[in-house]
Image (tube, rainbow, N blue to C red; front, side, top):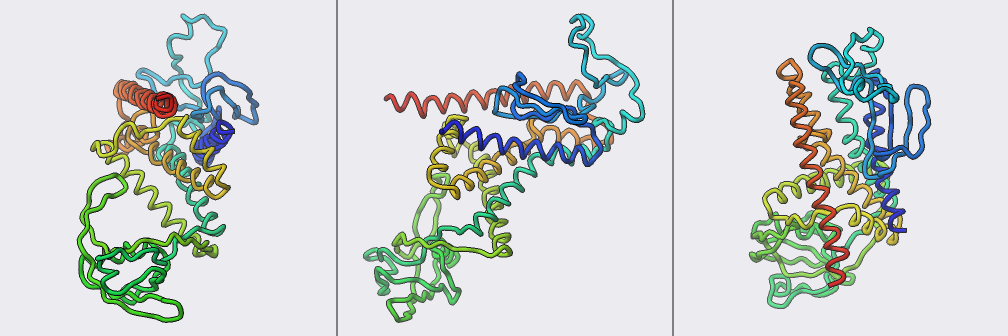
Length: 380
């Protein structure tokens, strides 16, 4: 079942991504020749209208093939129509140059204004981000597990314990600002920068106030880096409640969560380049399959949250300015927009080759890490 869940997740995310390209291409009047889930040999396919819809052998990707997507060749325009598969190789080796009709130019991707091409290319990653945003909105309306502010321990000889706070106290406000989540305690203490805080707590039926001065503390962030901060010396009781949001609140909360994950994804990439995050943390399809199975077993909400996380990762990674990715195409089109002329064909070809090598290298690294993580280490 683990493999099935992984195929479901990847299939949906790839479909959403390619659907973005497809819909924007149609909106811009570009003829779409193929819409494929997966790549490689065709398993099944059906042509509806001008578009052939395919399910291909390898489910780790997909593509939308647009009329005129190959662009221009010096000395003429490449015939974007499919070559005769039965023709001798000596005939099909060279591109066919001819003048396109006005009707063909109006449906050709290469003949669209550069801003239209930018919109079509951006649509894939943007659809992934929008899909994650919608998932987070739905999750907020379904109910979000939240750790309460109930104290499980006031650590001995720390500021909170010295002030008189006890196990079982529920913190209700910091500096007269109401709080309901455990994370808000850390945020309030960090914002104090060591200055005294007024905390209100509920103890049984009584409301009590304490003035506490946080003490300096060295802790670690999500990336394992040591950071200087402040603490008052309390531990959570682990009490969890489910918080529900109406549609308006869910849009706000879903937007906040989407932005947090986007920011975290970008920061993770930066930290990986800085070698703060080790390269062996990169995961491939085996890791995705394992996590998909685990989240599906935990319930529909964790499974949807996992899908949203992956969708944001897919969207962000595709926006990186690496040739062969959407971001690489965007870079070329932005340069064309700025300099008022296309990037030379040779430069694009060399860049694509470099990008392909980088992408293949990343795939090899991901597969290698998966094998070490789930097979070699497990046997050891």
